[in-house]
Image 1 (tube, rainbow, N blue to C red):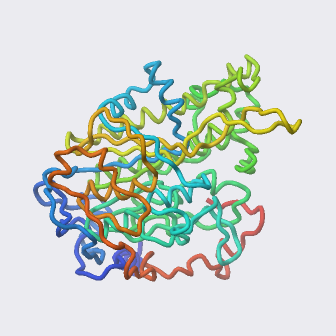
Image 2 (cartoon, one colour):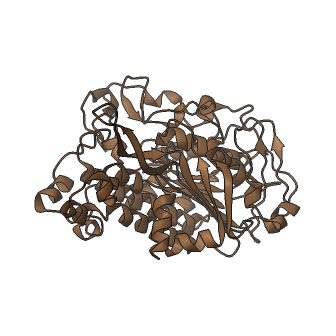
Image 3 (tube, one colour):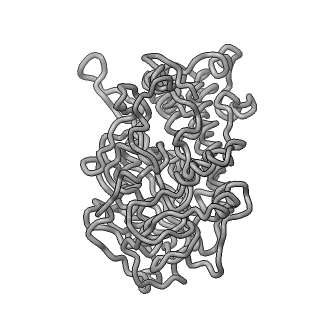
Length: 496
């Protein structure tokens, strides 16, 4: 990278958060919302770390509702794992078969709840709710794809969201944060820390034929922008899944393997090629998780969020093979595909174990499903007879475990809007009265609440300068002559 290009990247990386305040290093301790670990911390001596240290990169920060609390009771690290489609029905069945040891650990030692998801049950809208504490009427995100100002369609971009995310709220409170693969984080926004957005690697939504937006990889995929180069070795080939990785999910014939490696994805909405959907999503999930572990080990963020989409890719197609008698599936088809969904849950459990290994006795884990999944009914073709149908459910799974969390508790009333307020409370920061959610105080220990009473301010969105939201103008989505976006049209390949 040339010196001028490097300087430009670092200037973009250092462009401020929306709140006014002093400029300081992103690992500096917060005032009032302090990282409770003793001793100073600095970026590790990676290439990016040295660049940022040499440039004195910082973000403009300001206090945002963090006041008096006992730092000793706060978690030293909080990990948020999102798992779309996580169904208590399958989790409980597999727990009864002793197949999910890590889920058992956090459920027995923590809090479980059914959290109501807002309609419509689409990923971006639900995840905007989870990450803002607000319902779609406020945050404005709905649908899977968005039409950009240049007329092209792309996976729902972060520019659509009208409110600060919890990552920006924590950043304004000088909490070091990191995210990897969370829905609705592309283009990457300015934070006090690191963002590897959901656009950093090919997902099924970037690959679907309904997506007409085409661009060069790397543009607005990370914050700071120079993080892209450091993470490049961790990006998996979307077509690089190995046959031995497929085996736990399916028993395939040779022509079906060709669907994974040689056939286009087609339409995600119509599940034209569900085997390739599975393969692309599997590779993307591993990329996002590997990046999450890298960020945890290298930069030690206090709060990290990451995401698994595999169940959301598997269940709409293969749920029926899990219940062959209900859906009239032949024994042979059930043998070949009936284990796919449960293999997905075992995959999530294994990755949950990897994240638990990154925690100390003073860390906290939040597992949240964007929505659940179940067998519903609809009226059949005769207009009168109900028939079974696999469908998403508004009953989303929510599990909290670790520092400040009660043991062996089942909550009877929770909503996905409660995730952000509760996360803020666990960091010692205030929630806001304009949020639709509340702090799940029944999930928190009396000892934690005795020294960290949740507080409420009016809003975290006041004086939000959105012109500095990305470190560059929002018209980055406009077509420019000669750009990849300008050359894309209906049916054009995603170019990723």
